[in-house]
Amino acid sequence: MTLDFNKMGGLVPAIIQDAKTKNVLMLGFMNEEAYQKTLETGKVTFWSRSRQCLWTKGETSGNFLHLVSMKADCDNDTLLVEAKPDGPTCHKGTDTCWGEDNLYNPILFLTELQDFINKRHEEMPEGSYTTALFKKGTNRIAQKVGEEALETVIEAVRGNKEKLVYEASDILYHLIVLLADQGLRIEDVAAELLKRHNPNWDKDRRLAKFNGTYKK
Image (cartoon, rainbow, N blue to C red):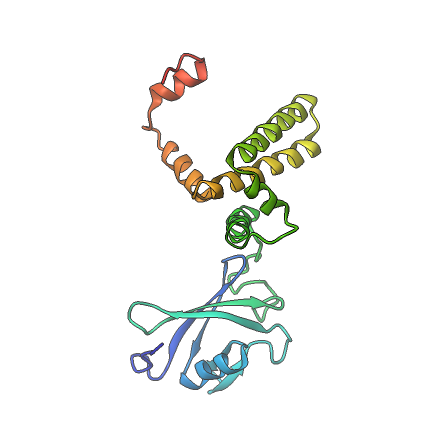
């Protein structure tokens, strides 16, 4: 990666993003030496404009930023740095320099789970329940989705919220396995739902389905 350090007098802005939560943690500046030290040590290092020296984030507080990846923008004059923070990033003790909590949105895990299941599909390791499902084929996987759906309905009718969440989780897992079996991803389902969120999306069909009068 070739960076243009000349536009800002030897510096490039470095946007720091949590590699897991995807939240933006801070903005710093790197010169070429800071950039190289970040690559060499795996700890995000900046150039301090006020002190006129290199500083590795966390060298005083212990809240290091561990490098995961770096990439330049289209003009090669700004860096997006993905890192794993050891603790609060801001010197004021907050998770981010904007005072926000660096929380992980659990919905993002669905993509991680999809990637994991896809890897199981590719590698088919022995002793894995997911592997066993793939080996049994589409019919068995689809059957499991139906079984888990029924169990979810039962717990909803019973009013047992804890078991409802448990069974609904089983549905999602087996649904993702079924999608992977068919060469699809959970994001394909999300894209379809996003399309349907448009107020102008096929109102008549939606209403007919609700009323039980829809015919294919």
